View 1 (cartoon, helix red, strand yellow):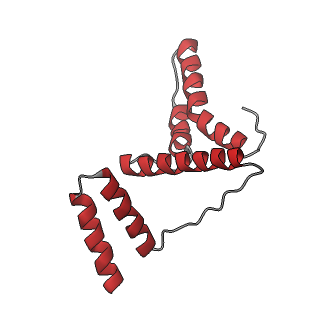
View 2 (tube, helix red, strand yellow; view 1 turned 120 degrees about the vertical axis):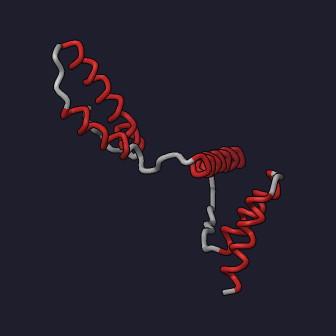
Length: 125
């Protein structure tokens, strides 16, 4: 019970805080108390490689935090893929509009293709 109370206290402090440094430290405390801690061990063959990998991980963490704070829809393009069914269900009176719909469908599917490609899967579009 004491931990839950402290988590609530830190959350309130976080809302009231104006300092970015203070917010960062409060977020770290909150993560440690709420079992949201991960230890990343980054290695490499040289000091430069380790530094570069650390920078990439830091960039990824910052991007993820920013996305969560901004309310970005998570799910690797799932929301966009679900929209394709609605576009496919439409009927168009002329060929130009059908071509436009095909372009929209390709744009909706592209993020999922990119994620799959980055994961090492070879897919045909």
